[in-house]
Structure formats: C-alpha cells, structure tokens
Length: 107
Image (cartoon, rainbow, N blue to C red; front, side, top):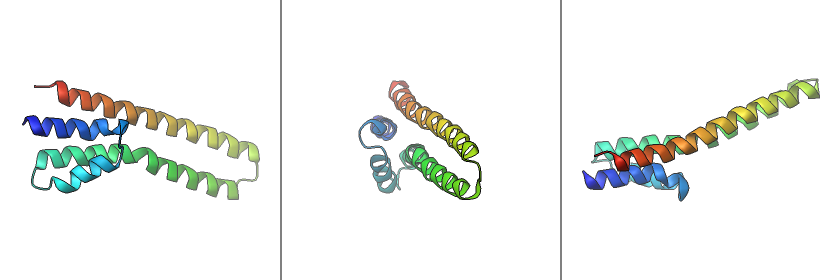
C-alpha cells in the first residue's frame, strides 16, 4: 500500500518535474497493479489535456482566420479561446498538485 501511494502521488506531482513522461511510464509498467495503473492513466490524461486543448485552439483559430472576413471578430475569438485555454491549463496544473498531496496525506 505504501508503495502504491508514493507512485500514485508521484504520477500527479510529476507535473512539476516530468509532466507527461512519468505518468506514461508508470501507466505502461503497472499493468499488473490496477490501482496504480488507473491513477497513472488519470494523471497522464490530466497532464496531456492542456496540450490537446492547445492543438484544438490552433486549429480553430486557423480555420476561423480563413473563413472570417472581419479581423475584429477573429481577434475576439482568439482572446476568448486563449482565456479558456489558460483557465483549463491552470486548473489542470493546480489539480495535479492538489491530488498528489491528497494521496500522500490520506492514510
């Protein structure tokens, strides 16, 4: 149990030192341990979420830039999408830290 808690916590706290790679490695290597496997998978997708959103943001801005005639509307769309992206990235970052500490603290 102690080993699982440490690995689970490090999977979330790895956002500070090795964001995507550490949970991915743990996820791949813990196929025989369902609890650690599940936690590492959740941490991996939580770390990947901002990158996926950034790619979607770039695609939406690129496509909207091609089809919008008014530069003002495209600018406002960019500001709104960047604000949403920033909020999701910050929440993902802090949620990873909070969740990692919660796993360490719980008995």
